[in-house]
Image 1 (cartoon, rainbow, N blue to C red):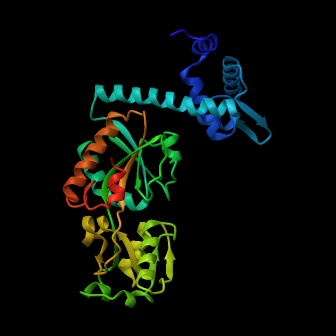
Image 2: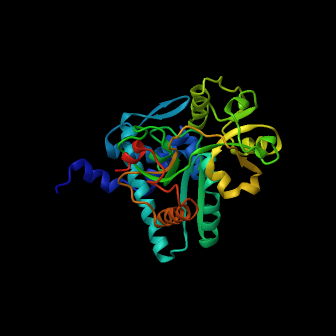
Image 3: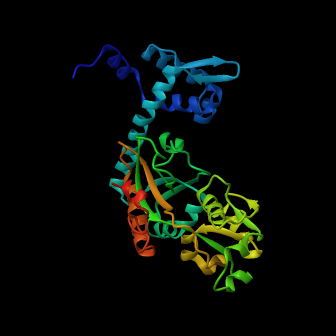
Amino acid sequence: MSETLSESRVARRLRFRDLQVFFAIVECGSMAKAAARLKMTQPAVSEIVAALESAFAAQLFDRSPRGVEATIYGRALLKRGLAAFDELKQGIRDIEFLADPTTGEVRLGCTDAISATILPAVQNFCIEFPRIALRVDTLAIPTGDLPELQARKVDFVLTRLSSPNQFGDELNMEILVDDPPVVVAGANSPWARRRKIDLSELVDEPWTCTPRDTLTTMLIEEMFRASNLPVPRTRVTTYSVLLRTHLLARGNFLAALPRSMLRLNTEGIGLRELPVELPRRSFPIIIVTLKNRVLSAAAELFLERLRAFVRSNFPGERAGRGMSESVGSRRQ
């Protein structure tokens, strides 16, 4: 295949370091800040930018007293350059892993609740592979485009599937396990000793919930409305699993939490599932990856161990079992 003159010119002049500088400037919004991060002088950074703009014959940044911002040409280079830069870094890591398969790095993003669910799997992986570093970035409510994944700051994301069109065409989805919510109280709560509870008894109790646009809270509200009951007033609203479990264990609060949190560490967190039947819904945890991106050997190894952990600890709720037809059809 013939190579255009511009491709030939760029290929001769573009260096790995040039892309590092370019991405740092975009992220920092300032050549001075990028220079400080990269431990370079500002004139050296400016010289690299000038060389890049000459090579591409386009202005990559708009300059202003407030800093710099990528132009449409800069954004085009950012989108494609990130993929190329990431693949090169992945290649370096893969070579290192092939030389020593017990080393590497895994970067994943997940919500606070899911990080609590996979805690035993993380602990086991760290024991089995002590020289593979794990980086876990906490995501509040992952959006449909998953910018952290698109920017390749993480290898994959663990999140929940909430709608059929939640993710775009650039993302792959694998259902890992169904993890429905249950109504929970502290082990010392009077409710924990009850064998039968009528929903109407819980209307005036103090609840701690995630914000109203989250799946578990919407389900709780739906449950009360379906029984022609008023929705309980949420006393404490938070994403924090630590804060919610503390309020449950130490106080008289009620909450809806993923069943996995109780199954894996019931005694440790001092909580009990209450005999309250929730509407049947599927709440699968899913693995989301970028299409056309090859994961590092370390990331693949972590996912392999994670799937094995699910098979051992959630035999009745693995992917494809205990799920609604609508979710199951999206796996095809």
